[in-house]
Image (cartoon, rainbow, N blue to C red):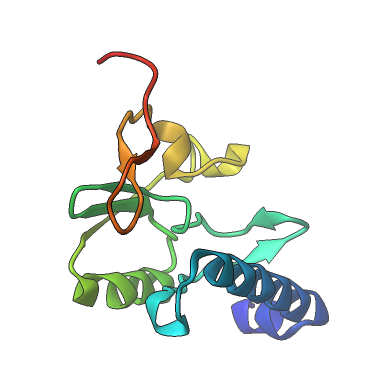
Length: 130
């Protein structure tokens, strides 16, 4: 069933659009192809069919993402990220968030200070004291 979807004209169209968006974002950020990490997800009618590990939360060296509930996808997420250093934690968010159009980031209320990749002033600062 998954192969059928991925190889369908609609599946190829979504893949091409996602790749074009990722390429444009990487170029705008000055990233090389080797610096970009692709993670698996399937879409239909603009919605993710499997929980989407891309919409994740990074806390220190922890990468917390939705468990795609499809073992080959979970293995691909770990294989793409763990060699780069983070500990991958996949959580089942299907019922509370995915079926309602959300993912792991919808389940968090994280406040953090983000810095530009090469140091400098924070790009985003929390306005709320913790």
